[in-house]
Length: 359
Image (cartoon, rainbow, N blue to C red; front, side, top):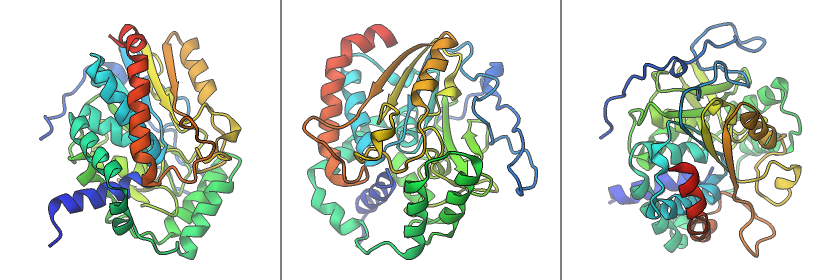
């Protein structure tokens, strides 16, 4: 019999390998209301569902807020590292769950939901279990070769070098046409098993995605009327692997399939922000296996823009683990245990710095 724990493990594996909630409190701050969308890209037909937000996000959501947290995308590799890092900081008295605004992309959306929903430590325990039993993954994760539709979507994503709307739309069409085992109907359920809820966990949380058809950048807010497992599933729907996922009437793909894997502009205006990114934004990230596409990465400009707007920023770049020169796949479960361990080490080393910055 397939027990609930087995299903949880299987579901979490699928979600990461891409990489009782309280009632939603309504915030009275003007910046908490999503700005109107600017309209859809060519051929989409115009409607305003409040999800589409060009970069930079306006008006700034972080205005008047004290602490911002930006959690970038990076598969099981980055998700595991963040679990270890958060654990060490928490032990040192630094609670990142006190952030007033959090934006999560792909794997970062899972961590953002777990952190703001109070499930962080259960989530971390499950990841540690994965790290101790890597052989279990071989039985849970499909080992069959990807089909032609999946290969097409992956190829378009990994070879794209421009982040213009037409390129993103092209990747999106391939994502919609890919026959994935965890598709639009099943992937959100798998994500629900991982993050532990469907209700939006906190008014502080925002997630990102990209509209497959229009190529627009989407921001899901506490007021969007979308369940958090769907938001996180959309944010992590890697073309040719998972999803894509419906957000309302939009079929969506990974929030990192554009010029940013972090979307720092969402927290603009906040007094101080911690940004966690898998890479430093340099063009060589894909060559060493730290990015699943060759799209431009605007991380450094995003950080500069935050600082120019008066935000005190600390950027933590995970990068390659000590002694590692290449990552064959950031989705491979073999990285979970060493990334948790490295995250814990980095968190212990950064504890004094982060306590002074965050508390």
